[in-house]
Length: 426
Image 1: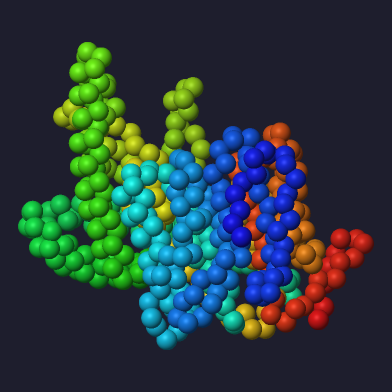
Image 2: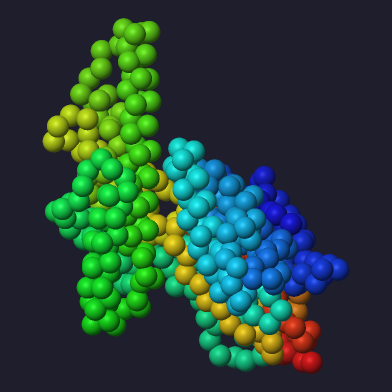
């Protein structure tokens, strides 16, 4: 079952908890369109993917930004692409993780080829016979709550400029591009150029591995820098096509309307060549002062020599899409797999419309207080609304999607009490 945001912010939640004949894990899904009326969240519940000969139940949420197109595409096709792109390996979980990685990069390339600049986060949960795998891109967090223990819940790290590992990765990628500009590489022939890039990135990644070890940072996936720089080549190819289209449109406007094209017009129809990227803060339109959290900014060369035009800025350091953002904003997912043969875990997949209002500890308390995952999702939504009202807002500002999934192979039950407390019983 796929879900999308409701048409109105205050419509009743839809009950989608199921226990179907295919043994889809119990789950609950609620969603609200925020007061900004963007309707850019998407969700998938109860689909399946097949990797390495094993069938996995598939759940996902996508928090779109800059438009709905990227989230729509992920909702409709990502699970099929995972199955299709999974390698034929002996271990199903390895095939699943690699299939997810390949699918995210492939879908990202498809969006670029279609000239879609919108982007989306992705948070995916796949449940197999005795394992569960989380994969995530961006800042839509998943929270794993052990229902049999009061120990703290585990949450997926966010891919944003507040994550030191992500800051180090992006700086490393920007450094690689600067160094490659000085690297002797042939122009013109694609094969020779790619061979030169491979030779450069192999050496660069070896140096980078030593640096990350010295800084106690988690290692990067082998060939990640190479893959990111090859994505830049695709960006430049796409830019050439867009520039040609824009120049043609400008010429047609002059021909049809006799319009005089000013320098400002020229900058507005920039040649799409990235100038630089950096960590910055957005500025207030009222007074021009910095406000809000640190974001990843991208500047572009203007068509007039020596000019630059501000490009898209993103709150995330990884996403699917966002081809007008920094080149180091990549679609690489992180993954985590764990054994589920003897656990009762409740997993919350949610967009930041929830996590901006509800803490992990508060969410875990809600999860442990009820047996039905649909009730748990409702409870989280109610908690988010209460916190939003306490902060002085009417309703929820941001689109909010909450998907709660039970991993409970032994069919344990949560017994609720009148006082709102609960315990897990066999």
